[in-house]
Image 1 (cartoon, rainbow, N blue to C red):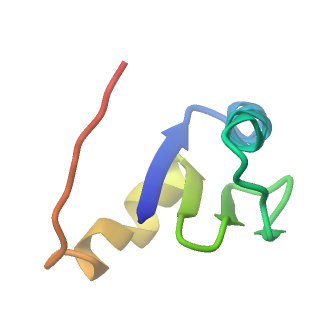
Image 2: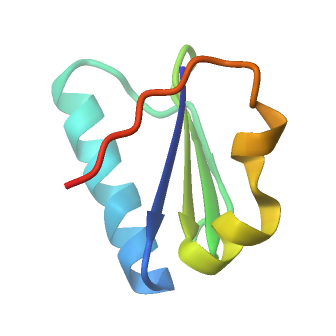
Length: 78
């Protein structure tokens, strides 16, 4: 799975990273590596699940949804 999420600021992005890591650990999924810690785009590798967390600006700039456009999407908003 490829998860794409965004926060409004670098601080929110880092908070989301911490929360994702904590919640996945509760389910027995431990992060194998994290790239870009404390930046505007952080990639978390859980093996079968890759999590990308962007600031809104970086998400718009890189538009990786377009790269993966032939995949099935599930939009989730809260």
